[in-house]
Amino acid sequence: MSSPSNSLVKISEIQGRGRSLIATHHIKPGQILLQDSPILLYPFSHHPNPTLSSSTFCSHCFRTLNSSKTLSCPSCSSLFCNPNCLTSSHSQYLCQTLTLTLTLNSRLNPDLQTQLNFLIAAYNLAIVYPSDFLTLLSLQGDSSPNAQTLTLHSILSSISPHPPPEFSPELTAALLAKDKRNAFGLMEPLGLSGERLVRAYGIYPMASFFNHDCLPNGCRFDYVDNVGDRNTDIVVRAIHDVAEGREVCLSYFPVNWSYGDRQKRLMDDYGFVCECDRCRVEKNWRDEEEEEEGEGMEEDGDEGMEEGEEENGGERDGDFPHAYFFVRYLCDGENCGGTLAPLPPSEGVVSNVMECNVCGKLREENVDGDDGEDGIMLDE
Image 1: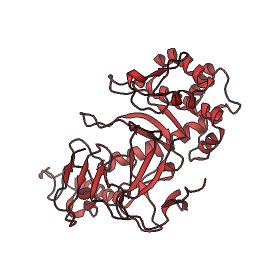
Image 2 (image 1 turned 90 degrees about the vertical axis):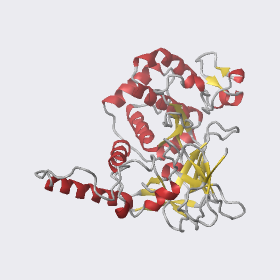
Image 3 (image 1 turned 60 degrees about the horizontal axis):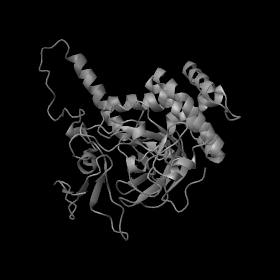
């Protein structure tokens, strides 16, 4: 796969990190590094909010439906926001398969439902857009059939009226591995509870090459309820200056997660241990704390936290070399935890307005660059 034309990033192989995205020029804060459209979208089946379900959204673009303009497929009851969404990829295979899953889903656990949704969308892609299906197969991730894969393949075999020629347990296993390694969640707006829930998942062919860093220099935004044809695009902007030749990374989860939570998620979902600068520092804290706990087990000393150590994530100001990132780029909105990036530059001038990628709030920074004071929150 080639790099996007006229882009600030290019695909490059980095030893130990695989294919990555590298800055082709010096990048200014807020510059758009990538705008990527999905080749595949599928619904998230176990939405924890009982007032929201897949029937609330368009089955193609996942925009919130306007009840007065909703279209329904007469066969499978899928809902759409406009005629283009109804006809764009709603093939006979997809319609018939979804019809047969209506009664089946009530007997499947939510995780299997979501994986089945992906497989139906993937095999439909092979029929409707074969070139995009080949792109999906070119992404990272490979696996051999296991018990769960065989179960899903058997279920899909029973409900697929005319499966594609490539249909096999081996391909099903490979597709599920691609999904696990490369899918992005299309997110709900931030709720009152402070949770930002997944509405759907998508495969974005270029965005999948962004590697992870626990203190990223790129920030991903999505605007699924925006008007227009590209509401499901992912937009990645630079958080701060990035030097030419430097790798551009995203964080795969909120940057304020603890060391242990970050490492667990990365191992469970992506199969690797993060050794970024931040993790190396925080790992040393853990090692030191474990040694101190071992030495103090026989003493009746004070069990309180050490001076300079904070309860929030265990961060110790004096030992944390990346504290500036949290002061400048972590949203201070209640229950948010999002990352701030400047709005795109105007006529080459870097914007002093920061946007949160979770709650969407805008914050105006002081023009003189004094980062010690809070910015001014702007009305949306």
